[in-house]
Image (cartoon, rainbow over all chains, first blue to last red; front, side, top):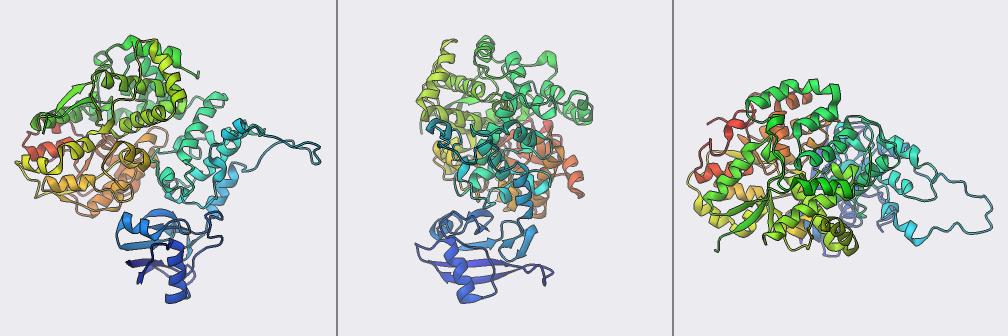
Length: 318
Length: 294
Protein backbone atom coordinates (compact mmCIF):
# COMPACT_ATOMS: atom_id res chain seq x y z
CA UNK A 1 0.00 0.00 0.00
CA UNK A 2 1.19 3.45 -0.84
CA UNK A 3 0.51 6.29 1.61
CA UNK A 4 1.02 10.03 1.40
CA UNK A 5 2.11 11.42 4.74
CA UNK A 6 1.79 15.04 5.76
CA UNK A 7 4.23 15.36 8.62
CA UNK A 8 4.10 18.26 11.10
CA UNK A 9 7.50 19.91 11.51
CA UNK A 10 8.39 22.58 14.01
CA UNK A 11 11.37 23.49 16.13
CA UNK A 12 10.43 25.79 19.00
CA UNK A 13 14.02 27.04 19.24
CA UNK A 14 14.40 28.18 15.64
CA UNK A 15 11.03 28.29 13.86
CA UNK A 16 8.39 30.99 13.84
CA UNK A 17 5.71 28.84 12.21
CA UNK A 18 5.30 25.11 11.69
CA UNK A 19 5.24 23.51 8.26
CA UNK A 20 4.29 20.11 6.87
CA UNK A 21 6.60 17.77 4.93
CA UNK A 22 4.94 15.55 2.36
CA UNK A 23 6.41 12.08 2.18
CA UNK A 24 5.23 9.14 0.12
CA UNK A 25 6.05 5.62 1.17
CA UNK A 26 5.06 2.01 0.78
CA UNK A 27 3.70 0.42 3.93
CA UNK A 28 3.34 -3.21 4.72
CA UNK A 29 0.29 -4.68 6.41
CA UNK A 30 2.34 -5.59 9.48
CA UNK A 31 3.58 -2.00 9.96
CA UNK A 32 2.51 0.01 12.95
CA UNK A 33 2.57 3.83 12.97
CA UNK A 34 5.88 3.78 14.85
CA UNK A 35 7.51 1.88 11.95
CA UNK A 36 6.53 4.77 9.74
CA UNK A 37 7.97 7.34 12.18
CA UNK A 38 11.22 5.36 12.24
CA UNK A 39 11.37 5.22 8.47
CA UNK A 40 10.80 8.97 8.18
CA UNK A 41 13.83 9.52 10.43
CA UNK A 42 16.05 6.79 9.03
CA UNK A 43 15.27 7.13 5.34
CA UNK A 44 14.01 10.69 4.78
CA UNK A 45 15.19 13.19 7.37
CA UNK A 46 17.48 12.40 10.28
CA UNK A 47 16.43 15.57 12.09
CA UNK A 48 12.83 14.35 12.49
CA UNK A 49 12.15 14.09 16.22
CA UNK A 50 9.72 11.92 18.18
CA UNK A 51 9.59 10.00 21.44
CA UNK A 52 9.75 6.24 21.52
CA UNK A 53 10.95 3.56 23.85
CA UNK A 54 9.34 0.21 24.58
CA UNK A 55 7.48 -0.55 21.33
CA UNK A 56 5.11 -2.67 23.41
CA UNK A 57 2.34 -0.24 24.38
CA UNK A 58 3.64 0.03 27.93
CA UNK A 59 5.92 3.06 28.25
CA UNK A 60 3.40 5.57 26.85
CA UNK A 61 6.08 7.64 25.06
CA UNK A 62 5.01 7.53 21.44
CA UNK A 63 1.53 9.11 21.50
CA UNK A 64 0.89 11.32 18.45
CA UNK A 65 -2.19 12.33 16.44
CA UNK A 66 -3.04 10.74 13.11
CA UNK A 67 -5.66 12.79 11.27
CA UNK A 68 -6.66 14.29 14.60
CA UNK A 69 -7.02 10.93 16.31
CA UNK A 70 -4.90 10.31 19.41
CA UNK A 71 -2.77 7.31 18.61
CA UNK A 72 -0.19 5.30 20.46
CA UNK A 73 2.20 4.89 17.52
CA UNK A 74 3.60 1.50 18.54
CA UNK A 75 0.17 -0.05 18.95
CA UNK A 76 -1.81 1.25 16.01
CA UNK A 77 -1.50 -0.61 12.71
CA UNK A 78 -1.12 1.40 9.51
CA UNK A 79 -3.76 -0.72 7.74
CA UNK A 80 -6.32 0.33 10.33
CA UNK A 81 -5.40 3.99 9.91
CA UNK A 82 -5.73 3.66 6.13
CA UNK A 83 -9.08 1.95 6.56
CA UNK A 84 -10.29 4.80 8.79
CA UNK A 85 -8.91 7.76 6.89
CA UNK A 86 -7.77 6.65 3.44
CA UNK A 87 -4.27 6.85 1.97
CA UNK A 88 -3.52 10.45 2.94
CA UNK A 89 -2.48 10.63 6.56
CA UNK A 90 -1.51 13.66 8.63
CA UNK A 91 0.93 13.03 11.46
CA UNK A 92 0.91 15.64 14.20
CA UNK A 93 1.98 15.93 17.84
CA UNK A 94 -0.75 15.34 20.48
CA UNK A 95 -0.80 19.08 21.23
CA UNK A 96 0.36 21.62 18.66
CA UNK A 97 0.33 24.28 21.36
CA UNK A 98 2.97 22.47 23.39
CA UNK A 99 5.45 21.34 20.75
CA UNK A 100 9.14 21.32 21.54
CA UNK A 101 10.16 19.72 18.28
CA UNK A 102 8.10 17.88 15.64
CA UNK A 103 6.21 15.12 17.51
CA UNK A 104 7.71 15.92 20.91
CA UNK A 105 5.54 17.97 23.26
CA UNK A 106 6.23 19.43 26.68
CA UNK A 107 3.97 17.36 28.95
CA UNK A 108 4.62 19.49 32.05
CA UNK A 109 0.92 20.45 32.25
CA UNK A 110 -0.08 16.80 32.10
CA UNK A 111 2.32 15.74 34.88
CA UNK A 112 1.46 18.68 37.10
CA UNK A 113 -2.23 17.85 37.00
CA UNK A 114 -1.51 14.16 37.34
CA UNK A 115 0.41 14.87 40.55
CA UNK A 116 -2.51 16.92 41.93
CA UNK A 117 -4.56 13.79 42.66
CA UNK A 118 -1.64 12.23 44.63
CA UNK A 119 -1.09 9.27 42.34
CA UNK A 120 0.28 6.95 44.99
CA UNK A 121 -1.18 4.68 47.63
CA UNK A 122 -1.75 6.31 51.02
CA UNK A 123 -1.63 3.44 53.46
CA UNK A 124 0.14 2.44 56.62
CA UNK A 125 2.04 -0.57 55.50
CA UNK A 126 4.69 -2.02 57.80
CA UNK A 127 8.19 -1.58 56.54
CA UNK A 128 9.12 -5.14 57.44
CA UNK A 129 5.87 -7.06 57.19
CA UNK A 130 5.75 -10.63 58.38
CA UNK A 131 2.79 -11.42 56.17
CA UNK A 132 1.71 -10.49 52.65
CA UNK A 133 -0.74 -7.60 52.19
CA UNK A 134 -3.40 -9.52 50.37
CA UNK A 135 -6.11 -7.85 48.30
CA UNK A 136 -8.93 -10.22 47.44
CA UNK A 137 -9.76 -10.76 43.76
CA UNK A 138 -13.18 -9.18 44.41
CA UNK A 139 -11.55 -6.04 45.80
CA UNK A 140 -9.02 -5.92 42.98
CA UNK A 141 -11.89 -6.07 40.48
CA UNK A 142 -13.23 -2.79 41.83
CA UNK A 143 -10.34 -0.98 40.15
CA UNK A 144 -11.67 -2.24 36.84
CA UNK A 145 -8.96 -1.45 34.29
CA UNK A 146 -7.92 1.75 36.08
CA UNK A 147 -4.39 0.55 36.85
CA UNK A 148 -3.65 -0.14 33.17
CA UNK A 149 -3.02 3.57 32.51
CA UNK A 150 0.39 4.22 30.91
CA UNK A 151 0.22 8.04 31.15
CA UNK A 152 0.57 8.40 27.39
CA UNK A 153 -1.62 11.52 27.39
CA UNK A 154 -3.81 10.35 24.50
CA UNK A 155 -7.01 11.08 26.46
CA UNK A 156 -5.74 14.28 28.05
CA UNK A 157 -4.73 15.92 24.78
CA UNK A 158 -7.98 14.78 23.13
CA UNK A 159 -10.11 16.45 25.83
CA UNK A 160 -11.86 19.65 24.65
CA UNK A 161 -12.40 20.86 28.24
CA UNK A 162 -8.61 20.76 28.78
CA UNK A 163 -8.20 22.72 25.56
CA UNK A 164 -10.26 25.69 26.78
CA UNK A 165 -9.79 25.53 30.57
CA UNK A 166 -6.22 25.53 31.90
CA UNK A 167 -7.30 24.59 35.41
CA UNK A 168 -9.18 21.46 34.40
CA UNK A 169 -7.31 18.37 35.57
CA UNK A 170 -8.52 16.19 32.71
CA UNK A 171 -9.34 12.53 32.17
CA UNK A 172 -5.94 10.96 32.96
CA UNK A 173 -5.70 12.54 36.42
CA UNK A 174 -9.30 11.56 37.20
CA UNK A 175 -8.73 8.05 35.99
CA UNK A 176 -5.76 7.83 38.34
CA UNK A 177 -7.72 9.33 41.23
CA UNK A 178 -10.29 6.58 40.79
CA UNK A 179 -7.56 3.96 40.70
CA UNK A 180 -6.89 4.88 44.36
CA UNK A 181 -10.37 5.85 45.58
CA UNK A 182 -11.46 2.37 44.50
CA UNK A 183 -8.52 0.72 46.28
CA UNK A 184 -9.63 -0.80 49.61
CA UNK A 185 -6.16 -0.22 51.12
CA UNK A 186 -6.16 3.53 50.43
CA UNK A 187 -6.66 5.93 53.34
CA UNK A 188 -6.95 9.13 51.31
CA UNK A 189 -10.24 8.46 49.57
CA UNK A 190 -12.02 11.55 50.92
CA UNK A 191 -9.02 13.79 50.37
CA UNK A 192 -8.80 12.72 46.73
CA UNK A 193 -12.54 13.14 46.24
CA UNK A 194 -12.33 16.65 47.65
CA UNK A 195 -9.65 17.49 45.07
CA UNK A 196 -11.69 16.25 42.13
CA UNK A 197 -14.87 17.87 43.50
CA UNK A 198 -13.51 21.43 43.17
CA UNK A 199 -15.39 23.40 40.50
CA UNK A 200 -13.18 24.51 37.62
CA UNK A 201 -10.55 21.80 38.04
CA UNK A 202 -12.67 18.81 39.02
CA UNK A 203 -14.99 16.25 37.48
CA UNK A 204 -17.94 18.65 37.29
CA UNK A 205 -16.29 20.41 34.35
CA UNK A 206 -16.29 17.24 32.24
CA UNK A 207 -18.23 18.04 29.04
CA UNK A 208 -19.22 14.38 28.54
CA UNK A 209 -17.98 14.22 24.95
CA UNK A 210 -16.45 10.71 25.26
CA UNK A 211 -13.31 11.81 23.40
CA UNK A 212 -11.23 10.25 26.21
CA UNK A 213 -12.97 6.89 25.95
CA UNK A 214 -12.39 6.93 22.22
CA UNK A 215 -8.73 8.00 22.52
CA UNK A 216 -7.49 5.61 25.22
CA UNK A 217 -5.21 2.96 23.65
CA UNK A 218 -5.61 0.76 26.75
CA UNK A 219 -9.44 0.87 26.65
CA UNK A 220 -9.63 2.17 30.20
CA UNK A 221 -12.77 4.25 29.60
CA UNK A 222 -11.68 7.35 31.57
CA UNK A 223 -15.17 8.93 31.42
CA UNK A 224 -16.58 5.79 33.04
CA UNK A 225 -14.22 6.46 35.94
CA UNK A 226 -15.31 10.11 36.01
CA UNK A 227 -18.91 8.92 36.48
CA UNK A 228 -17.73 6.68 39.33
CA UNK A 229 -15.96 9.63 40.97
CA UNK A 230 -19.20 11.63 40.73
CA UNK A 231 -20.98 8.77 42.45
CA UNK A 232 -18.34 8.47 45.17
CA UNK A 233 -18.51 12.22 45.80
CA UNK A 234 -22.17 11.78 46.74
CA UNK A 235 -21.78 8.42 48.50
CA UNK A 236 -18.93 9.64 50.71
CA UNK A 237 -20.73 12.84 51.67
CA UNK A 238 -18.08 15.01 50.02
CA UNK A 239 -20.60 16.78 47.74
CA UNK A 240 -21.26 20.40 48.64
CA UNK A 241 -24.43 22.10 47.59
CA UNK A 242 -23.46 24.07 44.48
CA UNK A 243 -24.62 24.62 40.93
CA UNK A 244 -22.99 21.42 39.68
CA UNK A 245 -24.22 19.01 42.35
CA UNK A 246 -27.72 20.48 42.30
CA UNK A 247 -27.70 20.12 38.51
CA UNK A 248 -27.28 16.35 38.93
CA UNK A 249 -29.73 16.03 41.84
CA UNK A 250 -32.29 18.28 40.13
CA UNK A 251 -32.99 15.57 37.58
CA UNK A 252 -34.28 13.21 40.27
CA UNK A 253 -36.53 15.93 41.71
CA UNK A 254 -38.02 16.74 38.31
CA UNK A 255 -38.49 13.15 37.29
CA UNK A 256 -40.29 12.38 40.54
CA UNK A 257 -42.66 15.28 39.99
CA UNK A 258 -43.34 15.22 36.26
CA UNK A 259 -41.67 12.11 34.83
CA UNK A 260 -40.12 14.35 32.22
CA UNK A 261 -37.62 17.05 33.06
CA UNK A 262 -38.84 20.48 34.10
CA UNK A 263 -36.14 22.50 32.31
CA UNK A 264 -37.04 25.79 33.95
CA UNK A 265 -37.04 24.30 37.42
CA UNK A 266 -33.72 22.54 36.79
CA UNK A 267 -32.00 25.81 35.93
CA UNK A 268 -33.61 27.66 38.85
CA UNK A 269 -32.85 24.88 41.36
CA UNK A 270 -29.25 24.45 40.15
CA UNK A 271 -28.43 28.14 40.06
CA UNK A 272 -30.23 29.41 43.17
CA UNK A 273 -29.95 33.22 43.09
CA UNK A 274 -27.62 32.84 40.10
CA UNK A 275 -30.73 32.15 38.04
CA UNK A 276 -31.05 35.91 37.53
CA UNK A 277 -28.23 35.92 35.01
CA UNK A 278 -30.34 33.66 32.77
CA UNK A 279 -33.25 36.11 32.62
CA UNK A 280 -32.32 37.89 29.34
CA UNK A 281 -31.80 34.57 27.60
CA UNK A 282 -35.04 33.18 29.06
CA UNK A 283 -36.96 36.18 27.76
CA UNK A 284 -35.61 35.64 24.26
CA UNK A 285 -36.58 31.98 24.47
CA UNK A 286 -40.02 32.87 25.82
CA UNK A 287 -40.68 35.15 22.85
CA UNK A 288 -39.97 32.23 20.54
CA UNK A 289 -42.21 29.78 22.37
CA UNK A 290 -39.30 27.88 23.92
CA UNK A 291 -40.37 28.15 27.55
CA UNK A 292 -43.13 26.08 29.09
CA UNK A 293 -44.79 27.84 32.02
CA UNK A 294 -45.07 25.84 35.26
CA UNK A 295 -48.85 25.53 34.94
CA UNK A 296 -48.49 24.05 31.45
CA UNK A 297 -45.73 21.63 32.39
CA UNK A 298 -46.43 18.31 30.62
CA UNK A 299 -46.35 15.10 32.66
CA UNK A 300 -45.47 11.55 31.66
CA UNK A 301 -48.36 9.09 31.44
CA UNK A 302 -48.45 6.55 34.30
CA UNK A 303 -46.58 9.01 36.50
CA UNK A 304 -47.39 6.91 39.60
CA UNK A 305 -45.11 4.17 38.29
CA UNK A 306 -42.25 6.62 37.91
CA UNK A 307 -42.76 8.04 41.40
CA UNK A 308 -42.77 4.57 42.87
CA UNK A 309 -39.65 3.54 40.97
CA UNK A 310 -37.78 6.63 42.14
CA UNK A 311 -38.81 5.81 45.70
CA UNK A 312 -37.82 2.15 45.67
CA UNK A 313 -34.75 2.35 43.41
CA UNK A 314 -33.05 5.39 44.82
CA UNK A 315 -29.63 4.51 46.24
CA UNK A 316 -28.27 7.93 47.28
CA UNK A 317 -29.56 10.83 49.34
CA UNK A 318 -28.50 14.47 49.10
CA UNK B 1 -41.04 -1.52 1.19
CA UNK B 2 -43.45 -2.31 4.00
CA UNK B 3 -44.48 0.65 6.14
CA UNK B 4 -41.86 1.56 8.73
CA UNK B 5 -43.13 1.81 12.32
CA UNK B 6 -41.20 2.92 15.37
CA UNK B 7 -41.82 3.88 18.97
CA UNK B 8 -40.70 7.51 19.26
CA UNK B 9 -38.95 8.51 22.46
CA UNK B 10 -39.21 12.27 22.17
CA UNK B 11 -37.04 13.20 25.13
CA UNK B 12 -37.90 16.24 27.23
CA UNK B 13 -36.35 19.01 25.15
CA UNK B 14 -38.59 18.32 22.15
CA UNK B 15 -41.60 18.90 24.42
CA UNK B 16 -40.24 22.06 26.02
CA UNK B 17 -37.41 24.24 24.70
CA UNK B 18 -37.24 22.85 21.17
CA UNK B 19 -40.91 22.26 20.23
CA UNK B 20 -39.85 22.70 16.60
CA UNK B 21 -37.92 19.43 16.79
CA UNK B 22 -40.99 17.32 17.59
CA UNK B 23 -43.10 19.24 15.10
CA UNK B 24 -40.63 18.79 12.24
CA UNK B 25 -39.96 15.14 13.11
CA UNK B 26 -43.68 14.36 12.87
CA UNK B 27 -44.00 16.41 9.66
CA UNK B 28 -41.14 14.54 7.99
CA UNK B 29 -42.45 11.15 9.15
CA UNK B 30 -45.83 11.99 7.62
CA UNK B 31 -44.24 12.97 4.30
CA UNK B 32 -42.26 9.73 4.22
CA UNK B 33 -45.20 7.63 5.42
CA UNK B 34 -43.31 6.44 8.49
CA UNK B 35 -45.46 5.70 11.54
CA UNK B 36 -44.12 7.08 14.82
CA UNK B 37 -45.93 5.92 17.96
CA UNK B 38 -45.29 8.42 20.76
CA UNK B 39 -44.07 6.92 24.03
CA UNK B 40 -46.05 9.21 26.31
CA UNK B 41 -45.32 7.04 29.33
CA UNK B 42 -41.58 7.64 29.07
CA UNK B 43 -39.66 9.62 31.66
CA UNK B 44 -36.55 11.75 31.27
CA UNK B 45 -33.41 9.72 30.46
CA UNK B 46 -31.40 11.63 33.06
CA UNK B 47 -29.37 13.35 30.33
CA UNK B 48 -26.12 11.78 31.61
CA UNK B 49 -26.41 13.85 34.81
CA UNK B 50 -28.79 11.71 36.87
CA UNK B 51 -26.29 8.85 36.51
CA UNK B 52 -23.66 11.03 38.24
CA UNK B 53 -25.95 11.20 41.26
CA UNK B 54 -27.64 7.81 41.18
CA UNK B 55 -26.43 5.41 38.54
CA UNK B 56 -28.83 2.60 39.46
CA UNK B 57 -31.90 4.83 39.39
CA UNK B 58 -30.85 6.04 35.95
CA UNK B 59 -30.70 2.43 34.74
CA UNK B 60 -34.14 1.59 36.15
CA UNK B 61 -35.80 4.61 34.55
CA UNK B 62 -34.21 4.05 31.15
CA UNK B 63 -35.11 0.36 31.29
CA UNK B 64 -38.71 1.37 32.01
CA UNK B 65 -38.75 3.56 28.91
CA UNK B 66 -37.54 0.64 26.82
CA UNK B 67 -40.28 -1.57 28.33
CA UNK B 68 -42.92 0.59 26.69
CA UNK B 69 -41.35 0.17 23.25
CA UNK B 70 -41.11 -3.57 23.89
CA UNK B 71 -44.77 -3.73 24.97
CA UNK B 72 -45.74 -2.26 21.61
CA UNK B 73 -43.48 -4.68 19.78
CA UNK B 74 -41.59 -1.81 18.18
CA UNK B 75 -38.01 -0.67 17.91
CA UNK B 76 -37.36 2.64 19.59
CA UNK B 77 -36.14 5.75 17.81
CA UNK B 78 -34.75 8.79 19.59
CA UNK B 79 -34.39 12.37 18.36
CA UNK B 80 -31.80 13.53 20.87
CA UNK B 81 -28.20 12.30 20.91
CA UNK B 82 -28.04 12.25 24.69
CA UNK B 83 -31.32 10.31 25.02
CA UNK B 84 -29.83 7.89 22.51
CA UNK B 85 -26.64 7.50 24.53
CA UNK B 86 -28.42 6.95 27.84
CA UNK B 87 -30.96 4.52 26.45
CA UNK B 88 -28.42 2.58 24.40
CA UNK B 89 -25.96 2.47 27.27
CA UNK B 90 -28.64 1.14 29.62
CA UNK B 91 -29.69 -1.47 27.11
CA UNK B 92 -26.12 -2.54 26.49
CA UNK B 93 -25.39 -2.87 30.19
CA UNK B 94 -28.54 -4.83 30.95
CA UNK B 95 -28.24 -7.11 27.93
CA UNK B 96 -24.65 -8.00 28.79
CA UNK B 97 -25.08 -8.43 32.55
CA UNK B 98 -27.86 -10.87 33.56
CA UNK B 99 -27.36 -10.16 37.28
CA UNK B 100 -27.81 -6.42 36.78
CA UNK B 101 -30.80 -7.04 34.53
CA UNK B 102 -32.39 -9.18 37.25
CA UNK B 103 -31.76 -6.47 39.83
CA UNK B 104 -33.39 -3.84 37.62
CA UNK B 105 -36.30 -6.15 36.82
CA UNK B 106 -36.88 -6.71 40.52
CA UNK B 107 -37.73 -3.01 40.75
CA UNK B 108 -39.71 -2.91 37.51
CA UNK B 109 -41.79 -5.87 38.70
CA UNK B 110 -43.15 -3.65 41.48
CA UNK B 111 -44.92 -1.58 38.83
CA UNK B 112 -45.89 -4.56 36.68
CA UNK B 113 -43.16 -4.20 34.05
CA UNK B 114 -40.34 -6.40 32.81
CA UNK B 115 -37.35 -5.41 30.70
CA UNK B 116 -36.70 -8.15 28.14
CA UNK B 117 -34.28 -6.58 25.70
CA UNK B 118 -36.37 -7.16 22.59
CA UNK B 119 -36.44 -3.62 21.14
CA UNK B 120 -33.47 -2.01 19.45
CA UNK B 121 -32.83 1.70 19.94
CA UNK B 122 -31.41 4.01 17.29
CA UNK B 123 -31.38 7.69 16.63
CA UNK B 124 -33.96 8.62 13.97
CA UNK B 125 -31.06 9.69 11.71
CA UNK B 126 -29.72 6.15 11.53
CA UNK B 127 -33.18 4.53 11.29
CA UNK B 128 -33.83 6.79 8.32
CA UNK B 129 -30.52 5.98 6.60
CA UNK B 130 -30.54 2.28 7.36
CA UNK B 131 -34.22 1.41 6.89
CA UNK B 132 -35.57 4.07 4.54
CA UNK B 133 -32.38 4.61 2.57
CA UNK B 134 -30.73 7.51 0.78
CA UNK B 135 -32.16 6.58 -2.61
CA UNK B 136 -35.75 6.48 -1.42
CA UNK B 137 -35.23 9.77 0.35
CA UNK B 138 -33.68 11.34 -2.75
CA UNK B 139 -36.75 10.29 -4.73
CA UNK B 140 -38.96 12.29 -2.37
CA UNK B 141 -37.04 15.56 -2.72
CA UNK B 142 -39.20 18.28 -4.27
CA UNK B 143 -37.11 21.30 -3.29
CA UNK B 144 -33.45 20.37 -3.75
CA UNK B 145 -31.14 22.20 -1.34
CA UNK B 146 -28.60 22.82 -4.11
CA UNK B 147 -28.15 26.51 -3.31
CA UNK B 148 -27.14 25.83 0.28
CA UNK B 149 -23.76 25.18 1.89
CA UNK B 150 -24.71 23.06 4.87
CA UNK B 151 -22.34 22.34 7.75
CA UNK B 152 -23.26 19.13 9.56
CA UNK B 153 -22.68 19.19 13.32
CA UNK B 154 -22.82 15.57 14.46
CA UNK B 155 -23.02 15.90 18.25
CA UNK B 156 -20.89 13.70 20.52
CA UNK B 157 -23.40 11.16 21.74
CA UNK B 158 -24.42 9.91 18.31
CA UNK B 159 -20.86 9.01 17.34
CA UNK B 160 -19.06 8.34 20.64
CA UNK B 161 -18.40 5.93 22.23
CA UNK B 162 -18.08 4.29 18.81
CA UNK B 163 -18.23 0.79 20.25
CA UNK B 164 -21.70 1.50 21.60
CA UNK B 165 -22.74 3.15 18.35
CA UNK B 166 -21.66 0.13 16.31
CA UNK B 167 -23.56 -2.17 18.63
CA UNK B 168 -26.89 -0.59 17.73
CA UNK B 169 -26.42 0.77 14.20
CA UNK B 170 -25.54 -0.89 10.92
CA UNK B 171 -23.91 2.35 9.75
CA UNK B 172 -20.16 2.11 10.34
CA UNK B 173 -19.72 5.70 11.52
CA UNK B 174 -16.12 6.71 12.15
CA UNK B 175 -16.12 9.13 15.10
CA UNK B 176 -13.01 10.86 13.71
CA UNK B 177 -14.51 11.28 10.26
CA UNK B 178 -18.28 10.78 10.39
CA UNK B 179 -20.11 10.86 7.08
CA UNK B 180 -23.77 9.98 7.70
CA UNK B 181 -25.01 13.58 7.81
CA UNK B 182 -22.81 14.58 4.87
CA UNK B 183 -24.31 11.76 2.85
CA UNK B 184 -27.80 12.73 3.89
CA UNK B 185 -27.17 16.33 2.85
CA UNK B 186 -25.94 15.07 -0.53
CA UNK B 187 -29.11 12.97 -0.86
CA UNK B 188 -31.13 16.14 -0.33
CA UNK B 189 -28.94 17.65 -3.07
CA UNK B 190 -27.34 20.19 -0.74
CA UNK B 191 -23.60 20.92 -0.53
CA UNK B 192 -22.09 19.54 2.64
CA UNK B 193 -19.35 21.63 4.23
CA UNK B 194 -16.25 19.86 5.51
CA UNK B 195 -14.80 21.48 8.64
CA UNK B 196 -12.70 20.30 11.58
CA UNK B 197 -15.32 20.91 14.26
CA UNK B 198 -18.08 18.81 12.74
CA UNK B 199 -17.46 15.94 15.17
CA UNK B 200 -16.50 18.08 18.17
CA UNK B 201 -18.31 18.87 21.40
CA UNK B 202 -20.66 21.87 21.82
CA UNK B 203 -20.17 22.00 25.59
CA UNK B 204 -23.87 21.88 26.43
CA UNK B 205 -23.48 19.59 29.43
CA UNK B 206 -21.51 22.18 31.40
CA UNK B 207 -23.67 25.18 30.42
CA UNK B 208 -24.57 25.85 34.05
CA UNK B 209 -21.40 24.96 35.97
CA UNK B 210 -18.79 26.03 33.38
CA UNK B 211 -20.40 28.54 31.01
CA UNK B 212 -17.04 29.75 29.68
CA UNK B 213 -16.05 26.25 28.57
CA UNK B 214 -19.44 25.73 27.00
CA UNK B 215 -19.46 29.05 25.16
CA UNK B 216 -15.91 28.56 23.89
CA UNK B 217 -16.70 25.15 22.42
CA UNK B 218 -19.92 26.37 20.83
CA UNK B 219 -18.25 29.49 19.45
CA UNK B 220 -15.32 27.54 18.02
CA UNK B 221 -17.72 25.26 16.14
CA UNK B 222 -19.84 28.09 14.72
CA UNK B 223 -16.84 30.13 13.55
CA UNK B 224 -15.20 27.09 12.01
CA UNK B 225 -18.38 26.43 10.02
CA UNK B 226 -18.56 30.11 9.07
CA UNK B 227 -14.89 30.21 7.98
CA UNK B 228 -15.63 27.30 5.69
CA UNK B 229 -18.46 29.18 3.97
CA UNK B 230 -21.41 27.48 5.61
CA UNK B 231 -24.79 29.17 5.08
CA UNK B 232 -26.41 27.05 7.72
CA UNK B 233 -25.53 24.37 10.27
CA UNK B 234 -27.60 21.25 10.89
CA UNK B 235 -27.59 18.97 13.92
CA UNK B 236 -29.44 15.81 14.95
CA UNK B 237 -29.24 16.83 18.63
CA UNK B 238 -31.56 19.35 20.34
CA UNK B 239 -28.98 19.99 23.08
CA UNK B 240 -26.37 21.01 20.50
CA UNK B 241 -29.14 23.05 18.89
CA UNK B 242 -29.85 24.92 22.12
CA UNK B 243 -26.21 25.89 22.44
CA UNK B 244 -25.65 26.75 18.78
CA UNK B 245 -28.95 28.61 18.37
CA UNK B 246 -29.82 30.17 21.74
CA UNK B 247 -26.26 30.80 22.97
CA UNK B 248 -24.86 31.96 19.66
CA UNK B 249 -24.31 35.60 20.64
CA UNK B 250 -22.90 34.75 24.05
CA UNK B 251 -20.58 32.19 22.43
CA UNK B 252 -19.29 34.73 19.89
CA UNK B 253 -18.62 37.16 22.70
CA UNK B 254 -16.70 34.58 24.71
CA UNK B 255 -14.43 33.60 21.82
CA UNK B 256 -13.99 37.31 21.08
CA UNK B 257 -15.08 37.41 17.46
CA UNK B 258 -17.77 39.31 15.61
CA UNK B 259 -20.48 37.38 13.83
CA UNK B 260 -20.95 39.29 10.55
CA UNK B 261 -24.19 37.40 9.99
CA UNK B 262 -26.02 35.16 12.43
CA UNK B 263 -25.59 31.47 11.62
CA UNK B 264 -28.98 29.76 11.25
CA UNK B 265 -29.07 26.36 12.97
CA UNK B 266 -31.44 23.68 11.74
CA UNK B 267 -32.57 20.48 13.39
CA UNK B 268 -32.01 17.51 11.10
CA UNK B 269 -35.74 16.91 10.41
CA UNK B 270 -36.15 20.61 9.56
CA UNK B 271 -33.51 20.30 6.86
CA UNK B 272 -35.10 17.15 5.49
CA UNK B 273 -38.52 18.78 5.71
CA UNK B 274 -37.39 21.77 3.66
CA UNK B 275 -36.22 19.46 0.87
CA UNK B 276 -39.48 17.48 1.04
CA UNK B 277 -41.51 20.66 0.59
CA UNK B 278 -42.80 21.23 4.14
CA UNK B 279 -43.66 24.83 4.99
CA UNK B 280 -41.58 26.83 7.50
CA UNK B 281 -44.58 26.76 9.88
CA UNK B 282 -44.84 22.97 9.66
CA UNK B 283 -41.17 22.82 10.62
CA UNK B 284 -41.47 25.35 13.43
CA UNK B 285 -38.79 27.66 12.05
CA UNK B 286 -40.42 30.55 13.93
CA UNK B 287 -39.19 29.04 17.21
CA UNK B 288 -35.52 29.73 16.58
CA UNK B 289 -33.71 32.42 18.55
CA UNK B 290 -31.22 32.90 15.70
CA UNK B 291 -33.52 33.77 12.80
CA UNK B 292 -33.68 31.42 9.84
CA UNK B 293 -33.99 33.56 6.67
CA UNK B 294 -36.82 32.49 4.37
